[in-house]
Image (cartoon, rainbow, N blue to C red; front, side, top):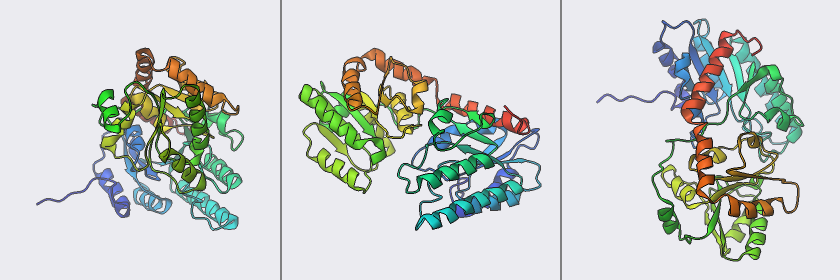
Length: 394
């Protein structure tokens, strides 16, 4: 029996996989090479979707997991004449194990020094801004300094919202000439999507006539848990029995999330699946809902929002999120997250205006503009244009 393995699935073999990718490279192309990326997200297919058209640009995506392994890959391909792009994603791992602020500063310096070593090996560096700062940062000033250091080291900074520079400006600055703008992809064909609304509600025991708000993904304080449940309760007091809240995702262990969970589990009109949702089960919660809600406290981008649009769900978002630039009023309600009644009024308005077939059609059309094929193609073209420009201003 011939036993093989998929490229990039084993961290300890990343350098060997780089050589495999080079062996399979089309050497007849004028330019090409590898795009090494880390950290790697296995629970969210975002990276696979973003890179789905990279090979059309002559680049093979390869997960390299950490700076040390990426350095080994860079050394292995040095002198080959091919491009080696290193694509950084979420940076929360850099300070995650810091014992105190002094240790955190050492970790940040070590990480930035590692990027310098990569550049000395001829690496072309790009960073994607996923969040303003880590959601539960212990060292906000140092995290901001770290991001400024990464921006300085990178040739390009990938932003998924045209408002990114504005939203992150209080924390770090991105020079306009470094911007590489490509939106977050939707999730077409990434999850099963055959279930009807009726079947989904029957499986969850939700009344057919209720207006269902959905909070999907990790259940953590940065998502505005307390604000959401407080506003939902006030809405329920206005019109008892008309609305339901559906929460699906694994909870954190912090006190606020625990208090939120305790309230949910005794709530008469809330439904909760507080666990990691398997891919094949995701459609149950998305099909059962009418409106997805995103009351995030420091919002920028959201994969859950792109997923909601993919399933035709209208959305409620704060007006200071980066996503507002892409969302039309036909399927989205924006609200002022700093006011005491902003979320309450937004939920009320959404329950009256966004439960129509027209609103769902608008969400579907919005997702159609950011299909994985379109976004993946745009990302591949943007990276190819950057590399071919020799790093000049776009």
